[in-house]
Image (cartoon, rainbow, N blue to C red; front, side, top):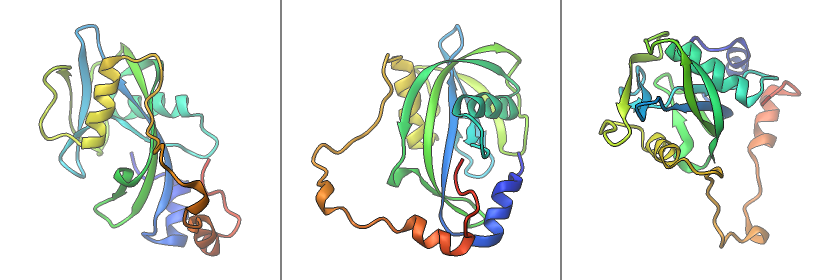
Length: 188
């Protein structure tokens, strides 16, 4: 899908600077224990369908909407599989736009619809056996798929137990970006 009006307006003010991007998606697993993946048009790698929240949108609604927009498949969300962010979730798009993704992934089951390339973000859309995922896959997506296949009852997240909270560097992202956007909505 094309860039939302919200993101287009924000990018007009900040250019390619880093944007913190809350995102949601789903690991769709059918009755044959196959995982639905998309071949991304921007990186030519296999990954999980999903995308950015629109302002005011709920995470679950975002996942359902993004999955349908990108795959043509209606899904039921079963549970949260992972809540992740960090250095390996910083991405630069081919146009130079930088994002720091905060990702919530759901385990889903398909309700209706056949997988199809439904927008310009994908080159291919298909199910893969859970034990035969493609080699050329986004590493962070592979991790989330593996967690979904394990089907845990609790969401996966990372935390450094040795984190010294008294000596963290000062946070400057919001201070710096507010200088460019003023009081506009930054994240929903």
